[in-house]
Image (cartoon, rainbow, N blue to C red; front, side, top):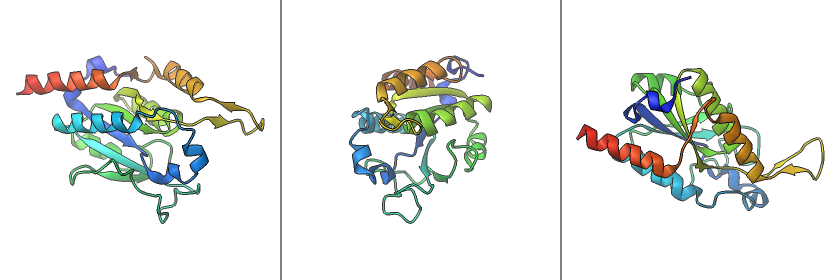
Length: 200
């Protein structure tokens, strides 16, 4: 796999994965989300990528779960996100963002070789997209603090669940230096700032 230090951030795109109201359809689950700074962190990265004139791509996930049907009133981006005319919104029905969308050709046309991962859920669509992107040859920045998740119930053991801290630890452990660089919002903001200064 490529590492982020091998590809300049000027060849990067921001992927905003499944930041949609569908997750709010089950209110009891939404109340147990982690990362209450999620919206602030995602918005900060969107603005940083826009300031650097780099691509921002949004995704909506559809499946049979409550709120994820395309005709559901919950099937829309969260209110803090306002895509610009040149920022596509792709609908996907797979856990990763490549298989069921035109993301690959979109990135190829723009000579993108590095992607930044944000969105919901940390260990599902975000992690799966990270693994696929790395296998396809992209350098990947995984911004854990710009992802979000919920406790995962054990379907084989009623009443047992994996808590959000354990999910984060496991996700970072599995991805770090194998599929992605684990990076903070502040690190990327600084890299983008330096890139803009060099290009000026």
